[in-house]
Image (cartoon, rainbow, N blue to C red; front, side, top):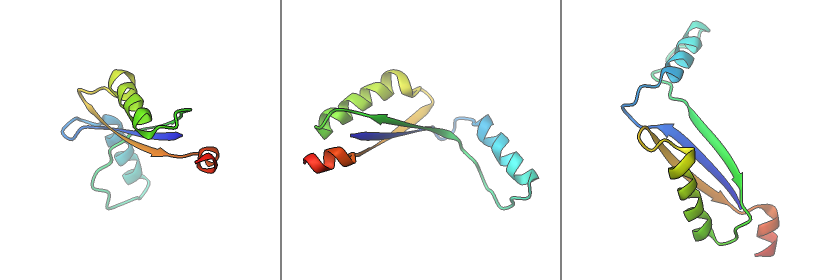
Length: 88
């Protein structure tokens, strides 16, 4: 099973890296950009076949290591791999 975890800063948390990207884009002529927020995307391949167990394990990973729960949110997407889809 493949997990895609998107980690973003919570609303209201300053994003200096996003602001730097926004400024760089404007300097290069990309106009009309209202705001840029940057985040992280993490892909994890799991051997777990049970979606509920996989989700619980991923939530635990996010809350204990991958995301800073004080300033970040996370979103988890799960997808079966081609091998797992053929075995189902």
